[in-house]
Length: 380
Image 1 (tube, rainbow, N blue to C red):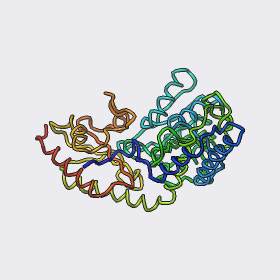
Image 2 (image 1 turned 90 degrees about the vertical axis):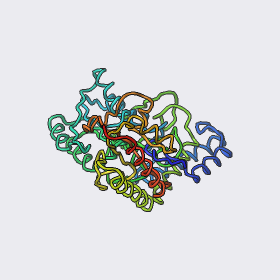
Image 3 (image 1 turned 30 degrees about the horizontal axis):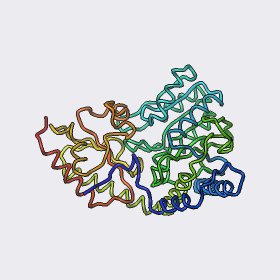
Image 4 (image 1 turned 45 degrees about the vertical axis):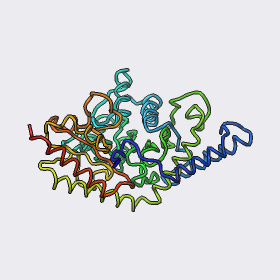
């Protein structure tokens, strides 16, 4: 039995997304920058996809720019804001994705900004009172706080953060990669400067994403080399990826409520079963479903002689999951998120993340295997 519980890392392509991408590959090969009929036809396809995305997010097509993914989108928002908007101070948190943290850290090393990281409690909640205190002292700051953490699933109220930032004329970027396609983002009501998306997190293709840039912000490209994306990103557009992204997001919005109910049921069921099956089980991050991303469950297991082999043992059993952010897999560096919330280093932590394709039968199989592994040896 093969079970995929690592949907925060990437999701399987939806069959309808594959279909529309293949049709585009077969019928439309032109370069959208070409002025002849083949190029114009593909340009129309790209702009139709842009209109689809912007309509779902309730914003203007002119504010949506396609990228190679969430990392590029985050980098573009951060670097160009600091350079082009004349900002010298930035605020973030220690649990942001490395696409954000590392970019801000490099800008600080280069002497372009002073970076401050907000306090985070042991549940992973960012101190928004501190955010307001800092902004009161230093208005017109760049703020980057993600909507949902990719490792522990904590949600941050980005509408409230946007209100604080507006009060102090701060520029606000929210990494929405983990929530795009899973929550409604109404940009006509959300006074935010930048948000990001990556198609492969919501059953679209890898290698394509987008950045929303509020029209009031005038920034330059991060990548030069052509006039594509209305002079904002050089390079021939990933047409098939863009088509797949738009279709995937459209499907998410069509079925969002029922998919959310199903996935939340899977997560809640697994939590209940783990508590019953394994003594002294703990959960990293918020467990209140209103404050936690419904696709992510981070579990801290009791320490046994098998702890170091837990992920490997699950993989051998046909269960795919993660020990933290997938972006750090293959390295010996521990999770910066779990370190920030002061999670016990003695407990092996595993992130299980779910999609509309998962079932309670899969949960039963995984919990049974986990119970077997945790009882294999006595606690040390």
